[in-house]
Length: 250
Length: 223
Image 1: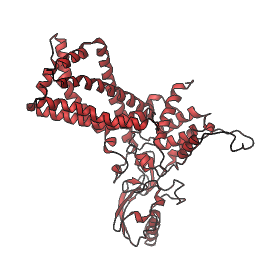
Image 2: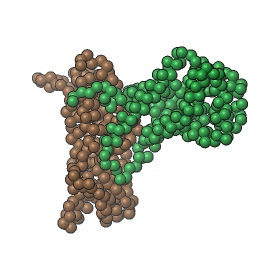
Image 3: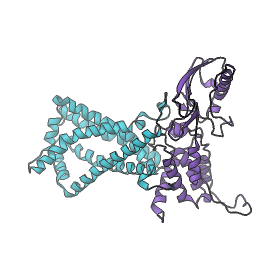
Image 4: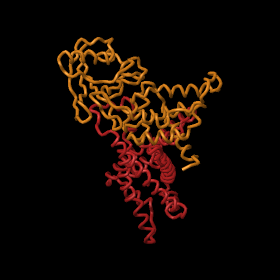
């Protein structure tokens, strides 16, 4: 099949950037979307042109590295998958496909389709951790956790931090990401020590990074490759309110 | 900055939006209930008693001030939040497929709210200002009669503005009702489906009742 690609090319952060058209011929329907980019890049290299820079790592849908805003949606037209798990059989012969980087003030473009997602790392280091006792490792089942709580915590922890929620949100809000990271600890006994402190610091960092405000459109949940639930955002709102109300210090 | 004050935070501001929104929703319940008295079709007798109570009772007077504060806070916070949202994506996408992941009215709350504000200016000019003038000058004021005067087919543009107002209200509520609960953290597997259902019915029934008022008066069903 033949795909008419319109790809965002941007030399560096200072460059304005523009969409450029590439016709990719002999695309196999079994190729992944990223493999199609590999084929195109090989051609560009042999032609002596600059290949398209894009993020990718495990190509198994679990690392959260690949991005790409494909035809107006993060990770393309399919639900619950990352771009590396998107295959060309999801498109038709002769389709025009527009590919852009994640767009957010907090995710500056480094080059072409690669954006800097360090803002997420800074949100995590603000409070996304637990204190652990030194000494020998404890027996796995020493701390009892109700199965439903463990399931909810696990579902929140499934977040791979790819940034699709920010990319999909009309306000570039990072609430789904931050709420998943807050929830996975707030639900478990190990996360109780820093519980109030954590949510306050992570939300403050999120705001400082310049992400927008949540307006509950639900776009993040619909586009999340790991189907992280909006329930996490409500939980974070509760956690934040009680942390602010009950904090016994300035 | 490792922490920030509640009202500077995105979550704190959203909670102000939610609380003022729910307060304005409670006002809608009172407003639609009292206005629905015109459907008794008793020449506005019951309605005028109720509206006289609303415009003269001292407790309601105090609540009226609260209502204005509620509106101002709701609008002020929405402007604050929107300004930050606009800054959060300085370079826009070339292609966005919004309908694939969210409802158009959820993405258009600012536009719907602005339409509502424009409607509100006309609406206050039609009823609130003349009532206040009458009270100030110590004159009698018949709200039912002024309703009949304003909602005649000759004033078709008023009826059009009112219908546009209630349609905006309906879609604003369709998102806002359930969104307020989510912002306050009230998301529960047992109760949220109920909240969503109530929200949908509320956003249909209340605007529909409001819409029927100018229509039924213009066509002489209510005299």
